[in-house]
Length: 360
Image 1 (tube, one colour):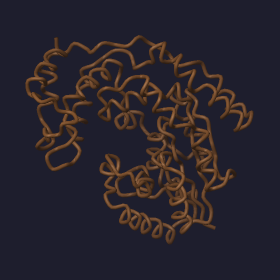
Image 2 (image 1 turned 120 degrees about the horizontal axis):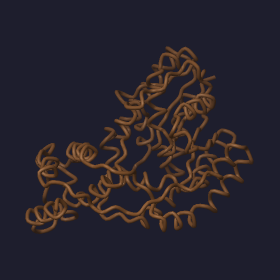
Image 3 (image 1 turned 135 degrees about the vertical axis):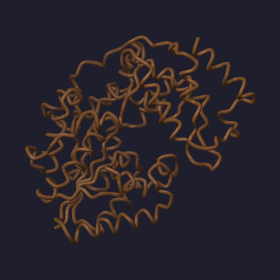
Image 4 (image 1 turned 180 degrees about the horizontal axis):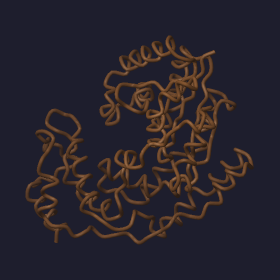
């Protein structure tokens, strides 16, 4: 009987680390009768989720899912070829699946049941007050320019864990949904997360080699407080597209790399008043979740974790004009300066003024 486990994240719960570990330990997995299929050169199966999300956008473009029907055909061929030559137990991992609506979950479930008799969904849940700073920073990295903490809290409210569990349980059955607590201690020792994950999917833990920390950090580096504020200030100067309509990803990635090099200081923390507001919004839902999932010690530990650290907001850092211009001067292609949604009318003069102001 063919069986698949679908790991759906959620975001900011060590998903990149686990995907790298599964990819690096592919031989050990196959020896244990588990297939972690390769979708091209990617270590995750994000294309699987995006193929059922009709809201096309930057993520689809970034992952090459420009034709969802064609992507499904390619995934079908990959699964079919692996089923015919290896064992019947498959493991997929994509946090993008956590973003699917109820109808999209049903479509994905029906698609997978064409190949598998059973589907188990594994999800890690992190307290949202601990996620808030990293989600805020990630949205800045993605191009947000006027984001406020209030908006970040409101956005995070839509990622309600109880609603997520209901959405998947209504399709695959409550008995086929495994919800696990993501503890903040996992961040200091990823082997705890890897051991828990391996236990849930039936992998012999002793045979798995954790990925090198530097390799994972290179894929998922976090800006510090100074760098986040600098990028937020610069986002209004960065064109989001080249003249051929493609995303201006290379310029943004080079800028983020440069900011990581030239900024310093403590990591981004919540301002104290923001933590109070977040606790007011999320604590009742957290208690409801723990009540729902039972009184297992690990969930009680999840709920009892002390609140995240707080810090006062930082100002835009003082940097030399030459450093900023170096980061901005080599675009990935002809830039589209015609988009009125980001470009002030006198963009050249405005850009020079703002860069000079930031550098002072």
